[in-house]
Image (spheres, rainbow, N blue to C red):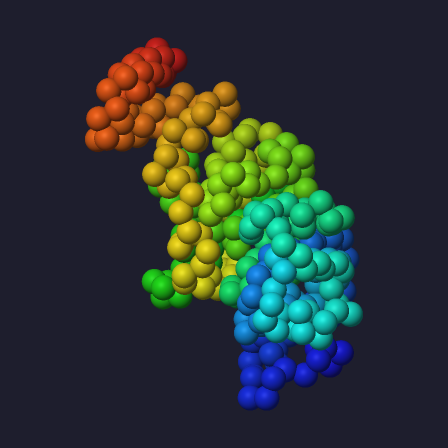
Length: 295
């Protein structure tokens, strides 16, 4: 902490004057390399607190990558203030938050990747240590936990199932990705400007080649009013059909029944008669097939 720039006057506590004790990392565990990717655009007032929340983890093998969309406020001033601790950064117009995240993936070299926005913050100084201590990561490709959501003043949102995931998303601020995940699933689909992470999460969640571990820990503080909560890209309204079209070959019969039922109910509500009939018969087909399978 002494090496970092001094915090602004009057700022104390986490992440300004508190840090993880570096001695915690000196035991014999082989710590995996970790890349933290921060997409940014005109967030000068917030970006310093997220950078310090990464750096004051004192994690031994950290890449810090900032992909800025061409900020015109004081964001670049803050980035330059911490440039000695930043592995790579760029500031130029991109195609949005998921394009920035994809650029960060391409620039990273670490075994594990983590994404956090400039209006969010890692929950406390022990997060990285607690996630990777005792070789917990060795049998996992995804490790996810909870976020503290300021809007509801509570933790969000525990362990997920497919049934839960098609109704609400896992916050990307709570997820650590092994690089293998992107080799199998690919990067984020930028055609969904506000919810590409929801589709990506669904695809790795149903893939039996990806080992998923939930840890009952708070990973980050999730700020209200973020980009995905304000922007519209058609995903939320059409997500059941999007999940089906992208994941049907890997979904279990139980999940196929669940998703096709949601689609035909939705089609009935909007009076799309032909689509309703198609998905209704798909739903019946998968339900009968599941019952036969269960015999």
